[in-house]
Image (cartoon, rainbow, N blue to C red; front, side):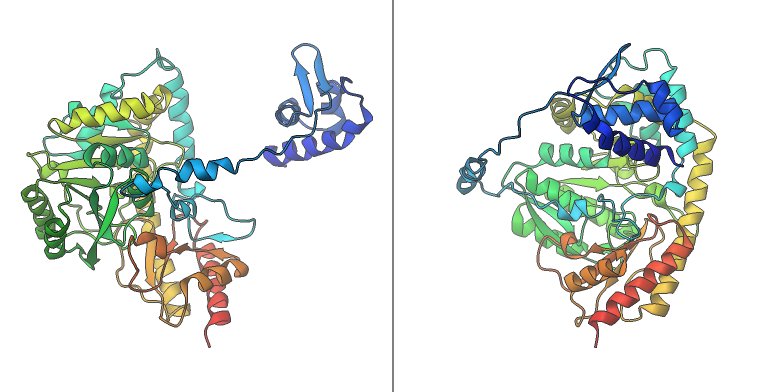
Length: 477
């Protein structure tokens, strides 16, 4: 039996027997519990720790476990005062800082048992380099000073590795190590834009970035995209109309459309921002999620930017594990000091063991093998999902077949309400990410985003599409 389920079952069994003991009464020894329930000593220790965390038992080293004393019933407090406290200053705020995190949480929440997860934002465990990560973490733990305080900007070797990955003339001294890409985006927007000011964003765009902007009191302004990504003509008009000093964009495999910004638009976007006296925050989240059949990747915007227009954000999280929250911010010029100051105030530094483990991982022979495997798998899964959608869900439109990233962006017919489809899909046993949170203004149509990276494989993809067909049949005439 799996260790986790054994722990839960033993904890429930012991909980059911607690009524036999008086407060302070001693429970059987760990050895006796091992023999009675035929489980390992580790399982017993973890089960007792779970009951201790619930306040049901007290463990005393060398003495054993005892039933905890009775506790007075919890008194329900009156938190209604918070409603006034949280809204008292809202009238004075240029942009309310209340944040709807539903667009982020939908990709983080674990689905109910038996539900196929097309709404995931990370690689399925079968695609994660779990063995290589464990080995890297073990080696990192043996490094001298592994639990010491790291430099606030990050380990020098790791900063230099990210600088080489970003390319161009970027140096390690121009890189800050962050706790993943989301943290880097938060730092960048707080550093570059004052509360109440506009920030230009692609439409549609990543809900987590919209949430970051709104939490900082910024006003996201949409710049429409097409099959080739951000439209320079509308970008120039948006800068002129709003006076914005920041643009956030994903030039490579844009989330959610999967668009790849072509060379002429890349140059135009930076030129337009430079003429407006504005920064470009380049969210390069998907460079390591390239599909096997993709053309050679363009360099980062930061690599071709000697004037410090571009603030670059990237991360190791998407290509490894949601828990390896190690990313980087790169910038040139005086803005680097502002980014550094905000980063230090917010989080001090990224834990050294994580940085050491990241260094061990990217320097190991397992790293290029992992990148090749994921590239092959993502291409195969993309093709499987796209073929299944075309065959069984012909009502849905796929405007763009991506060559990187981990999802398909599908447009719904006007007769199929987005919210109703998602509710019916959940009843059928499959989840999808809603399109609405990807727009900071009214969406032009209903959409769903289907991730092919967060599922177990082709069989689960086929079954998930079959369940979506069931949901659609429930709604369409």
